[in-house]
Length: 489
View (tube, rainbow, N blue to C red):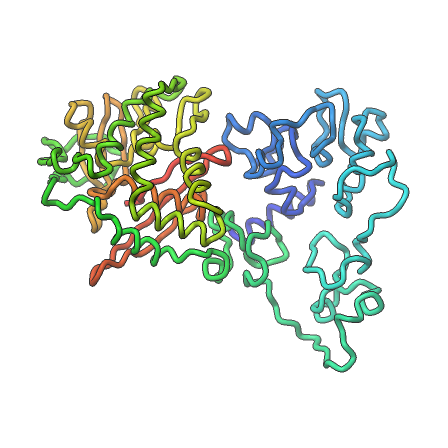
């Protein structure tokens, strides 16, 4: 969604009578258990988990613990006819407010000028400290689109100062300094704005959601993303000592078919023509530990997973061995330096949760990030979800479960867009990177999931005189799990 689309969306909400701050639009703050409202791009009720349309802060706002009997974190919900008590501004007239409507300060929160929490009196008797038409408590504050006037050094140039700006904020306008009526327009930059929520006052945005809506400022990557992806991914590529050269495996792409919607099998033979298992699966490498994992999963979506003690042990063994590699250590340090984690142990705990904890796709605990991305899932008897790993493709082709059909694209180094069927179900297009180690894919996907969520990230790997272009798609599931990650080929 570009800037003008967002602005138009906000205007529609405003005309329809809905609140239009960035918190109301993309956040669950004060909206927990709100009835479904298609005017919002994300939802804050328990059904949003099933429909995969929760706002990103649904869990951090603890909406899953909210109650219909209370206005706690619900002061901006819509009227819900199915409930006995309400948290809207009409409830006072209708005499059906929840018991803590006033003590939580809901009237002031709905006015957008008071959000400090419960008061000691059921009905506030003193005005909020900050007023939308005064500079009281607001001198030098950044532009506030919900206020009636402004109290920053640029308001003179934009002619939107509050009446008392010079008396209350005289320190902003020293008498010995010339004042200008032509302020620097910062609405097209991320200067001092990294991580801020959506604000339609600006021409562009500076939070991770801007990658999804394609409305980032030009300097977003430079100012707001603390990792240079070209440099980090090049370092990981060089450090991937477990990457397998074509000396130990070979492939035959055979039939080329750019229309990946066409399911016709135009390849007579297997994709893999040789595979040196004794070398690739040597216990000194990570592949042997990796290939033990996929048989722990129920392939069909809708059937809950049931981990055995052996399954859990195999996951820990796999994490142990990849955390001994330079690839994972480089990744951990980069994310620690970026401020995402405090320790390697914290990083490992998050990696385990995001990849291996089970979550709901069609039924409770029927999926996980690892199963979806690396092993693949049977969405239906005729359709495959995920499945983006070359080792798993080889193993299933060897077992006679997978029939390779064709390829739609190929790029160096060994990037392949493959079409195949698995147990009779179709995977029309799968981006696969041949030869790389499991830890390399974990490192790349995890970094993109954390730093560039719900977006496509392009980067260039440099290896000596060679350079390779990659694109990775990363999606978040239920706010804290890997929905999918894969190379776009």
